[in-house]
Length: 81
Image 1 (cartoon, rainbow, N blue to C red):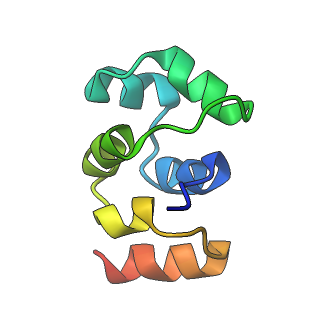
Image 2: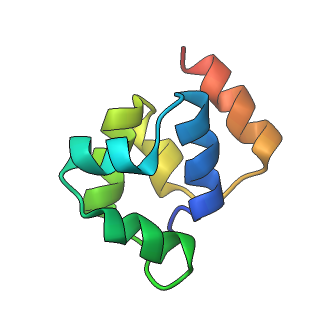
């Protein structure tokens, strides 16, 4: 299964006006996980991605499906409200 790219996560995160630090704390995921993800060293496993989706209040399928264009992500985000 293709995992969520950090840039895609950032789009969702920024729409919620949140930070990696706040999401890490709410998900009980080490902040270093986000740093490693950002630097391409690590991609969080599905369990962590699902926690992130819950905190961001976006459908889990947005987190687990292959990356889509920024425009498509925005359309889906608006449709999910």
